[in-house]
Amino acid sequence: MRVVMAEDLHLLREGMVALLTAHGFEVAAAVESGPELLQALLEERPDIAVVDVRLPPTFTDEGLQAALEARRRIPGLPVLVLSQHVEQLYARELLADGTGGVGYLLKDRVFNAEQFVDAVRRVAEGGTAMDPDVIAKLLASNARDEPLGRLTPREREVLELMAEGRSNAAIGQRLYLSESAVGKHTANIFGKLDLAPSDDDNRRVLAVLAYLQGTRRA
Image (cartoon, rainbow, N blue to C red; front, side):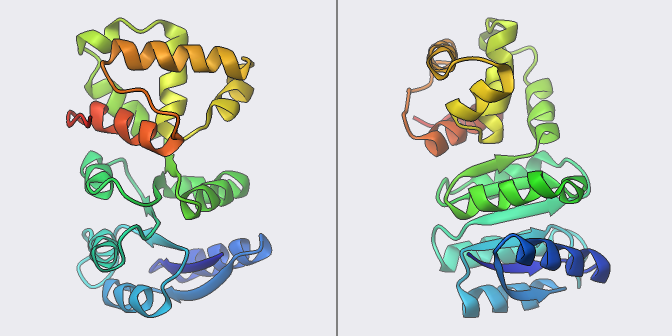
């Protein structure tokens, strides 16, 4: 898989390049600014973009905006963004078009090699990888929502892992449940939240995230 990466901190950028290369990825370009990122994405057409949200020259959301512009020109381009803090707006913008693999991780996750590489691979393959802290904040902001209040503690656990982008098999391994038991829980969750059921892991993740952000999709 070919990766284009954007990170302005030299040591972190070189560390991620070395880590991904060691796990079989080809880093086609590693840049440090928003304009360089957009140019590299349009020229290289990688399998995934791994992007720090805050890049020169503005150090606001330059990286995210460059990645979103690239997605407009290359529909479905998988993008994994890295951020120092949880910002719901970043997640909302990233998920807005509902196409292609997307991910949002806190930078601390980069130091967990297994977790970071798994997220890059999942997003590159068209899946979703959302940071647990992002999901926790979205759930907290919807804590008083009546349908969420009807979920059992186990269903909330399944919902959190589903929203992170985990498959039924992965959720089952994490919670020591059979895959069929997880399937029953997800069916109950979708019924209680009035969401259309789907066998497509990515579509159901996007549906759950859209629900948590207050913008339900059919």
